[in-house]
Length: 73
Image 1: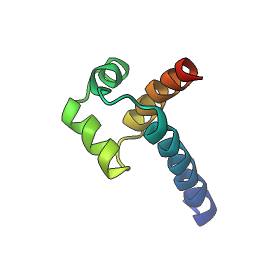
Image 2: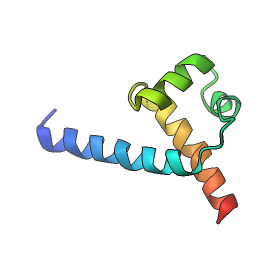
Image 3: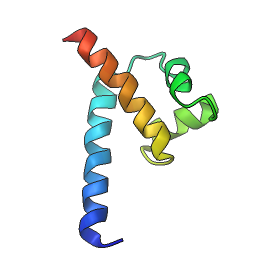
Image 4: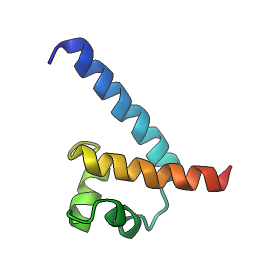
Protein backbone atom coordinates (compact mmCIF):
# COMPACT_ATOMS: atom_id res chain seq x y z
CA UNK A 1 0.00 0.00 0.00
CA UNK A 2 1.44 3.35 -0.93
CA UNK A 3 1.92 6.17 1.56
CA UNK A 4 -0.84 8.36 0.10
CA UNK A 5 -3.41 5.62 0.54
CA UNK A 6 -2.21 4.94 4.11
CA UNK A 7 -2.48 8.63 4.99
CA UNK A 8 -6.01 8.77 3.53
CA UNK A 9 -7.08 5.72 5.54
CA UNK A 10 -5.53 7.14 8.70
CA UNK A 11 -7.27 10.45 8.03
CA UNK A 12 -10.63 8.72 7.54
CA UNK A 13 -10.22 6.79 10.78
CA UNK A 14 -9.21 9.99 12.57
CA UNK A 15 -12.34 11.73 11.27
CA UNK A 16 -14.45 8.75 12.30
CA UNK A 17 -13.13 8.90 15.85
CA UNK A 18 -13.97 12.61 16.07
CA UNK A 19 -17.62 11.68 15.46
CA UNK A 20 -17.37 8.65 17.75
CA UNK A 21 -15.89 10.74 20.57
CA UNK A 22 -18.54 13.40 20.20
CA UNK A 23 -21.71 11.34 19.83
CA UNK A 24 -21.21 7.76 21.03
CA UNK A 25 -23.29 7.21 24.17
CA UNK A 26 -21.60 6.07 27.37
CA UNK A 27 -23.34 2.69 27.19
CA UNK A 28 -22.51 1.79 23.62
CA UNK A 29 -21.26 -1.81 23.65
CA UNK A 30 -24.66 -3.53 23.38
CA UNK A 31 -25.65 -1.43 20.37
CA UNK A 32 -22.30 -1.96 18.67
CA UNK A 33 -22.50 -5.69 19.37
CA UNK A 34 -25.81 -5.79 17.47
CA UNK A 35 -23.91 -4.50 14.43
CA UNK A 36 -21.01 -6.96 14.81
CA UNK A 37 -22.33 -9.92 16.82
CA UNK A 38 -19.24 -12.04 16.22
CA UNK A 39 -16.98 -9.90 18.46
CA UNK A 40 -16.78 -9.57 22.23
CA UNK A 41 -17.69 -6.46 24.19
CA UNK A 42 -14.09 -6.38 25.42
CA UNK A 43 -12.86 -6.19 21.81
CA UNK A 44 -15.25 -3.32 21.14
CA UNK A 45 -13.96 -1.40 24.17
CA UNK A 46 -10.33 -2.06 23.20
CA UNK A 47 -10.81 -0.76 19.67
CA UNK A 48 -12.51 2.37 20.98
CA UNK A 49 -9.85 3.09 23.59
CA UNK A 50 -6.84 2.20 21.41
CA UNK A 51 -8.34 3.91 18.35
CA UNK A 52 -7.11 1.10 16.14
CA UNK A 53 -8.09 -2.43 15.31
CA UNK A 54 -10.78 -4.29 13.42
CA UNK A 55 -12.28 -2.02 10.79
CA UNK A 56 -15.68 -3.72 11.20
CA UNK A 57 -15.75 -2.59 14.84
CA UNK A 58 -14.70 0.95 13.93
CA UNK A 59 -17.47 1.06 11.31
CA UNK A 60 -20.03 -0.19 13.84
CA UNK A 61 -18.88 2.38 16.42
CA UNK A 62 -19.26 5.08 13.78
CA UNK A 63 -22.71 3.82 12.74
CA UNK A 64 -23.98 3.95 16.33
CA UNK A 65 -22.41 7.39 16.87
CA UNK A 66 -24.03 8.73 13.69
CA UNK A 67 -27.39 7.39 14.82
CA UNK A 68 -27.06 9.43 18.01
CA UNK A 69 -25.77 12.42 16.08
CA UNK A 70 -29.01 12.56 14.07
CA UNK A 71 -31.06 12.22 17.26
CA UNK A 72 -29.20 15.03 18.99
CA UNK A 73 -29.31 17.47 16.09
